[in-house]
Image (cartoon, rainbow, N blue to C red):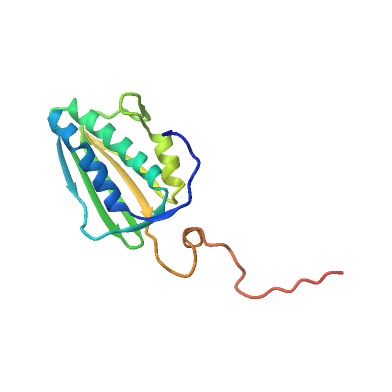
Length: 169
C-alpha cells in the first residue's frame, strides 16, 4: 500500500499533529535501540490540505530510516523540527549515521516514492548530508482558507487579465 499513488479526497488536517503522532508511536522503539529522539514542533495547529494516509506514510518512512540509520551510528539521535515559513511549512528530520541514498529495504524508505507523494501535495522533498549527519526536509504549502479551492491556490490558472473577444466567420 505504501507505493500506491492514488489519492483520496484531500481534507484539511493538522500537519504538526500528524507528525507528532508518528513520533510518539516510534518513541519506545527509539529508546529500545538507544536512539535519542528529540521533537520540536510548535503547539499551534498548522492547516494543510491533503491525503493524511499518504503524508503519514512519508513521515513514517523517513523516521524509520532515520531511526535505523542512527541506531548503527556512534552518536545515536534523531531530531524532528517543524516550522512555518510564510505560506509554507517545513518539517526537518535530522539523524546521525551513514545514510543509504535512494532506497533502504530494511526501513522501507524509498526516496522516489516519498518524493512523488510530497510532490502530489505541491511540496518539495530535500535531502542533504554532512559528515555523520543526514537531513530530510519536507516543504509543503499551508492551507489558506479563502473562497478559492486549494488546487487554485497552489496551481493558479493562467487566466487573461482582460476580456478577449473571438470573431467567428
